[in-house]
Image (cartoon, rainbow, N blue to C red; front, side, top):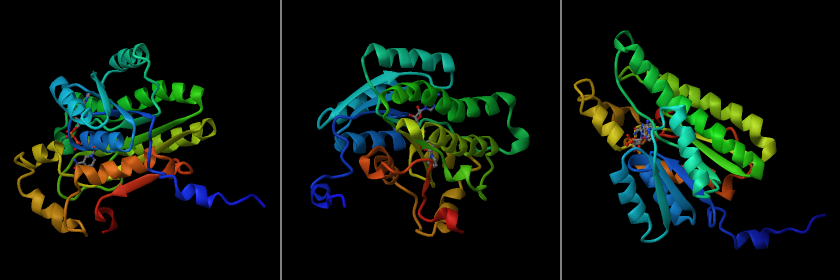
Length: 267
Ligand SMILES: NC(=O)c1ccc[n+]([C@@H]2O[C@H](COP(=O)([O-])OP(=O)(O)OC[C@H]3O[C@@H](n4cnc5c(N)ncnc54)[C@H](O)[C@@H]3O)[C@@H](O)[C@H]2O)c1
């Protein structure tokens, strides 16, 4: 019988990720910003990626007071730009252990009014970018036989939101869920785990901007009524789930979809 190593395990915090390098897209605000702080507090060096240099610089500076962070500006809705981003990652010798595909856009609009350009931009930003970046950084993870990819989908990828229409957003997020399962199955044998979080309504700029639209004005109260826990999530609630998937605590977990939604999808 193998000797138990429980005594050794008890001294090791499975949520520490010291020495790992984590790339967070959309890291300049909201859930991405919170995740970057939490991953850095857990010991990772964080590479923030996004298009707002002022925000990225500000978040990186805050993190550098207690941890390590750098940033790269990139437009993620284009494969060409993602190729340039990956070249920059290589030029700076960053070996990415943890990829958090978080950046996305939102819009509330009836299906009959969504234009071809709006549909296309939603799918490229929220779904295609997740595939392109996972494909290119995943290839490097496969070569190193280690990687953790965490995709941020949404409860809107699982259910149809009763309070506002957004078929293009929901479709993009449903796609992220299938992409997660497919890549997880394909890459498990290479030591690359791919998991997904489906946040419920979370108090970030994306949501407050939507709630400020004419369609969104009355919805804030309804969201609380529809949530068993009676409150929206904080960005940190989602960031803590990201840390779970990024850390050794989830080493035997792949292809899973974790709803952090205060019970919203139960009713
Ligand atoms: N806030 C919510 O209620 C909620 C609910 C469910 C899921 N989510 C998901 O969580 C993730 C984060 O959302 P958030 O609320 O923090 O949003 P947010 O709008 O506050 O932040 C999104 C970030 O992504 C960046 N981004 C968007 N498009 C980009 C592009 N083309 N290239 C580069 N960067 C780009 C933005 O600049 C921003 O920094 C998203 O995937 C979102 O769909 C949010």
